[in-house]
Image 1 (cartoon, rainbow, N blue to C red):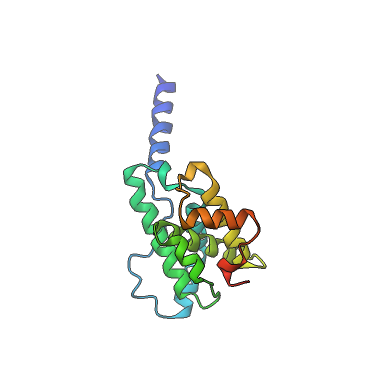
Image 2 (cartoon, one colour):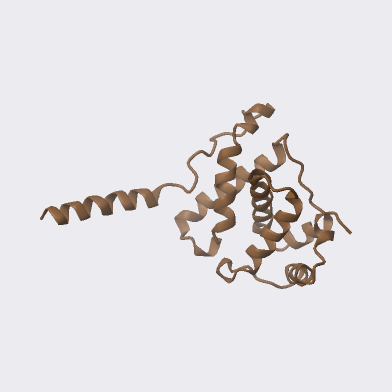
Length: 167
């Protein structure tokens, strides 16, 4: 009987842990973030969120988890636009890749935030490579047609520089 109780208790705590949002430090309101210091205070949370987005295929999530995923993506995207510590390059060629799938916009910015907060020497290069690897991963279920297909072809051929402002 004690084994059953212990198992039940462990199962309960396991399920409770699974029910937690992937990142538990998401701000309720971004309107209060008007100072650089406030945005910088988000770095640890954004890093955690960017790691989550880059490692998690949206197609692997159930309906309830999708809302959490999108909240994390919103936070990371806000930070990318507001952080005083990093500048992120978005070229017209890269925007074309996002055009038919807005989710790719969030994924790319998560890759860029992760690269910046990992301390990579070349954030743009690291981000574009991470982005291409995300798209190439079959578990992420990213349809490769049109501009996405062209991007992946260019990436595989080593012609990815134009997507980050390098000819």
